Image (tube, rainbow, N blue to C red; front, side, top):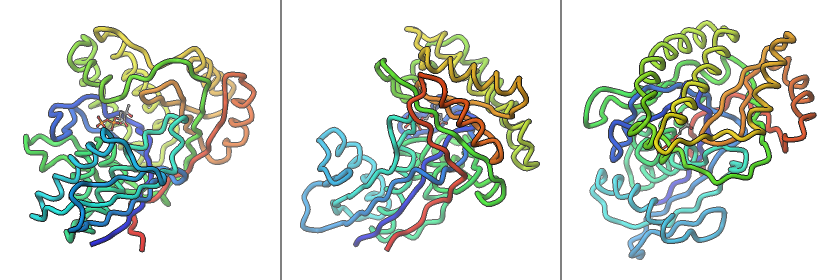
Length: 325
Ligand code: DP6
């Protein structure tokens, strides 16, 4: 009863920011992402009647109790679905530079959902896998698919209409995401904690919910038409709106550091000089720059000159999940 799978991480173009149900990971708004080629997680799961607890190894090291407990509660859902109560040994290799601000939880839970359901004998389609991965980390629902993906928020309380769907395959439109790692000094506020505080306390949150519906329409249309300028504008504006909600929270918080702002301004200057580049930012200080393949080298060169830039990881659209032998 063993299986292994690989899943890639994704970057949100239109952000998921807030839950309507924390147990089932149901979001308040739909979101759109691009799966990336470079960063991924490979996970093998072996259910074993000899085990009396789950054993989780991350990059070859046995994880602590807290980390293992998260995996156990996720696997419990799969055990209930399958009607089997076996424990498992889980081996996960993360090829995601967490310092670069990529959440390894997206690729991590997508790979785990895929490997664990197969290992326990469930034969599920991608939509169902997306619903299961979602319950480990919301953004993991999108990593089941390659390329440009939409995670539909759904309306139902049981989450049965809440899953991701592909919009456009990874081969269909070649864009670049430059992940710009900046020097950091502050403590992290996890996205889970940040979005909860914002939903509960920020007076700007209702404005976010109103605006994101319009941004989704624009982004979907831009992707289908492969209209880079239109997509870039809405991606950048949507990220700024998400971050604006955090300033209204109680207590207020901000993911940006001075280095973040320097990169944002450089991107805007590049654009003013005629180079098409747009930024987005997740729940951290690092910046992701969206550009066309022909502008990648130029933009990398320019951004590398900023003293606050530590490293730039260029990424391309990447594939959805795959099973490993
Ligand atoms: C800002 O998926 O990490 O990156 O569902 O609580 O695990 P949980 O949150 P997570 O949140 C991602 C937030 C974001 C935007 C996005 O990826 O859409």
